[in-house]
Length: 160
Length: 160
DNA sequence: AGCCTTTCGTTGAATCTTCAACAACACCCC
DNA sequence: GGGGTGTTGTTGAAGATTCAACGAAAGGCT
Image 1 (cartoon, rainbow over the protein chains, first blue to last red):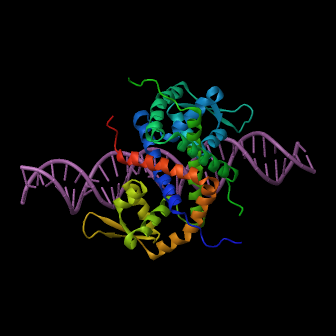
Image 2: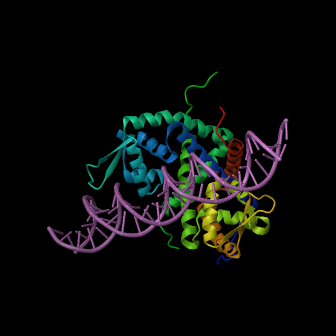
Image 3: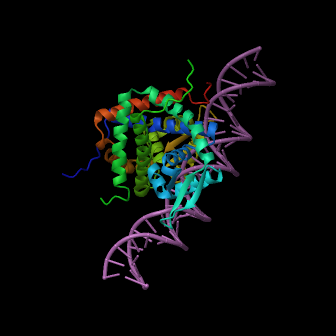
């Protein structure tokens, strides 16, 4: 049976979808602004610092880093260039694969990240976690885990 | 009792928060790409067309439009300029308030929106709704309703 | 009326992201 | 070992968004 007529969202789905859209817009804007104002970091920059800080040796291959934050490689190249210019990260070429480049957190980068983290976490609590019931937030996790799985599986152009 | 040591996220919160971040990144990128590929519209452009299509007379004041999508006025000015250049929207100055400007959906704009909508909704289902339990998705709605309320209340610089 | 403050929407430059093209290298398979 | 193919990361230009500054009009107050 071919599905022709579009199935619109029901009232509750519509409402949730819009709440998600505007809530996410406001939340990301706010977390980004807070980081910029107090720590001269954008949210994407901060996330990259966090990933590096968690990696062994505080270093990661560019591609791995890009995948871990789900940004394009080009975007990560530019972001890392900015962070490098700011002295928070350094680049070195990879021993095993001569195409490869590793980004490595500098001491200044680690310090910047550690300075920003408490404020950032406070924001996440204040604007999100404190407002939601734990069970509801766990549901958010389940939903977006599924979304990420679905879209990572099927990243390229659909072969419908 | 003053709170000095940062309260980090627990394991489950951490997991949900990251899932939300990457899931949202992937989801927005994908919906945006789909709209661009098939309908030459960005996701923000599409959302503006939707808001206009729902308004009486298919027209809205710029500021109201900006609030409804939670974008800056400047951003909406630029977006509307692009849509106007594409013939999907027209501007007219407001009768009651001579500072005001109204954006109005053209017939071509309405048609573009109606052409895009079924594909867009299919994407929202396929990448999100179909993957989530209804109750979980309702929880997403509750959470981001609260977030939006919190951040709309307190839009400017915090007066901590 | 006159002044002060706020709101409205726009502008152009700075910043960030996407996009297409590319050089360098790895991998595979013959 | 020599293609062919895919991967890695970068580049610069084009596109989108943010930011600061602004002119114009509204609203409030005396």
